[in-house]
Amino acid sequence: MPRSLLGFFATGADRPEMGDRDAIDRLFRRHRFRVMVAITLGYGLIYTCRLAIGVVKKPLIDGGVFTPVELGMIGSALYYAYAIGKLTNGFLADHANMKRCLAIAFLLTAACNFAMGWTTTVGLAVAIWGLNGWFQSFGAPGGVVAMTAWFSNRERGRAYGIWSTAHSIGEGLTFVGVGTLVALLGWRWGYFGPALVGVAAAAGMYWLVQDRPRTLGLPTVADWNNDHYEEKHDDGIKSVLALQLSILKIPAIWVLCLSAATIYVTRYAINSWGILYLQEARGLSLPAAGTVLMTGTLAGIAGAVAYGFISDLAFKARRPPTNLLFAIIEIGGLLLFFYGPNTMPTMIAGMVLFGLGLTGLVTSLGGLFAVDIAPKRVAGAAMGVIGIFSYIGAGIQEHVSGKLIQQGMTMVGDRRVYDFDAAIGFWVGASVLSMLLAAALWRTKLRD
Image (cartoon, rainbow, N blue to C red; front, side, top):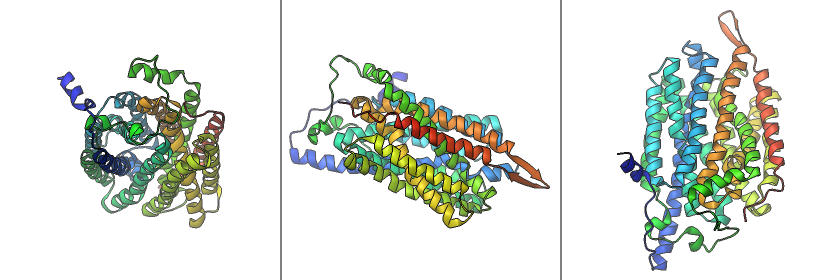
């Protein structure tokens, strides 16, 4: 049974290459478009199944269901499980059929969201949300493996930038769509709505994604596109597993892991606690708070695409200069958002700058830079190594933020009053540290 299950998820065998060049060109164009649509929109939709808890925090706290510390425990369970899963599933993704893996994983994460809608005990919520993190962890490595199978080296920055807009699509749908559902129908629909979206994403993934080109009788994308730029053949490495493990010998990977971990602290602090902050510190309603955060996600779409084009075309695929540029924009946006005047235009301007800079950094530090400096055949493993550090950072953030926010919470009569100063200092400091770590990789180049 286990062997047959592994066989079901394994990538198919290579087929003899077809000889009709016109047919090859037609199939490549068709499948490249379908794969990019699937991994971008599908991953964006499934994102709602991991961010839902950020929208329902205030009604859960006000209703006495969970405290901020307990919500930090539940949220961190997802990130820790995601961290481990992204590493192991990143290694497995290099051997897997993405059509089947992604569709099943998305269906299971939808099931976890359905279950969370009926859960009001801490232990059970931690277990279910942790499982959700595990199933969610198939998404990013699977998307990168599918992308690198169908898009060649010189296209990678732009393709990765387009794919990275999925983060912003999912965040926007969560902050506005799920936020509206919660405001109208109650906190349980903060989970039921994303669950229904997850089922649709699973169906779309199975319909649109294909296995590797060689399994369809097509040449590799590098051969088809005549793009073998800086591709190195490691004759001394005999197996995919050995090639995967060779990633750990690259010093820049370890610095990149720490830089990614710290930027993910800020990223998920805003995703997880931003709505609560806007409701309690700035006095906004749930739909208004979601709208403010959505402006950052819309800017993030532009940021992800812009990062790919700027780094590929302006800096000739050098990521460090672009990282510094986007880090300055991101930190400037944070400072304006938290410390600027308490007006809607100021908050929106800060969130636009933050979203623009952050999503560009996530595009690079969260995967693209690692894929650049690792062997191309093991892109999933490179994503996995970065991913475990990124989401350990996100998990630590949940614990620390929950404690800092609860420590700053006092009761004035029957009303809760929050002091977010300590949490804000933690979030901004993480972004500054990430920028400094990324700058230490200034001379790092593409693998040749």
